[in-house]
Image (cartoon, rainbow, N blue to C red):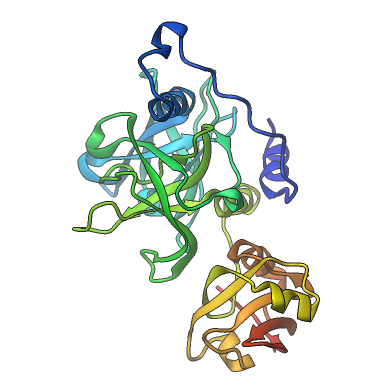
Length: 338
């Protein structure tokens, strides 16, 4: 798969083909497994070959989680790997360990601290890419399986459920990462960058953080965000994005409002908070508004808004439509560059 094909695939807004079916366990095991354990075993067998162990050296010292290790996963056959920005940012040397015992030196393609995502690349044959899902289809309560290398223990599998959607999480640089998946699948130091998968073995998130000393409160960056960011990193090596000074989360829209205002949407982006000197605040938006359109495009999710805040829109006067109570209001916002 060439670089252009990879970028085209990751930036494609159209859904791809349906997921391949995960192979069933051997017949001799059938009587020993209930439906839950069957699903976890199947996902572990399907996804684990894509998971890698990263050892990162920063200016003469080893770093990345406990024991100098962190996680990532191969997402293309030609060696591109997704992981966390905080794992590899500023790395002097990155080494990747594969499940079959092979080790390879990796180059940093690019990283984006604003979403805590990064792409590195290795040159190695016979790689097994993970299957990427659609985080827009994730539902609270569904099975969530995390695979990674906590404390250096390779390909550790933990299982739980999706606890909540649309969370915001503060990145290392202070920016809120929006549309984060919350799960109770146990994560520990070293899990950073590993995949969070659904019951079909599709990656729905990139594991990024835990809240200590709380138990069962863990977070993953949504895979749709990761697809967009990875595509831009592959194309440009960095992301320069527009910024309007809003922390948002996805919320469903009341049917009476969508009918009243003729909106072809079931959800929008709630303005959870505003930066006092941000572009959205200066335009007149308020906390509690729900953004439903930006630059003439419908906005059903935070991912939609992120896709529209591209570098070519920086400084442009762009229309934005919000719902405030039962009113539909229009504003003009000038995104700033970051």
